Image (cartoon, rainbow, N blue to C red; front, side):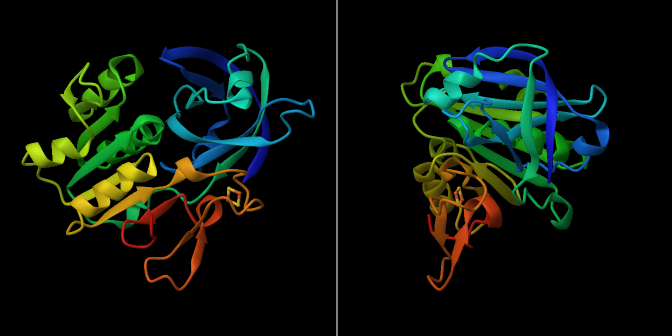
Length: 255
Ligand code: FES
């Protein structure tokens, strides 16, 4: 992990209350980032927002020396982040967390399932899997049409299914609707999103091997607040999502 001060290349609203920040990092820092890891952004230098915010990595572009993150505005800290401009310097710690162990798995076809703010890390994961010759099918779920982002980018990498809770786009309902309706072929799954969604996915796909990212539940992001503690599936131990995760084998922890 390194603490860096890096320039912002651009900040853009990409969907309802959803923003993307692109920043410039040196190649040797970018090369160390694995899909599923997060960065720890300091919101500003003042005392009010001293706390850093953990935000997952949405994309790494080694050709353009660019790191992209996507976040949803849900409080004053994230609201503050939307005020940043191109050329501002941003203070971050990178990379944090464990990431998806994609090099150690033997598979040909991966199913990626993301909901809301759990969608961004799946994009860098999808890109990395396709680069390794793995076929990718993606299911992304949002509350409503206005919240959808990256549909075109995921579509460039493989088949994509979209669900919205209100039925304003794609299939109405939760991501598990697609699992019920479609006869999908895959040999491994990766999922990231709100805990109820992960629980439903894990229960539905209990006979498949998979990895889930519990990043939604992080607080401080550095192991200090204990807001992220989860029990292992056997109930015998505890894991911190921010330092032991955020990625776990689907059968490793209780949700
Ligand atoms: Fe604070 Fe993990 S998020 S200890």
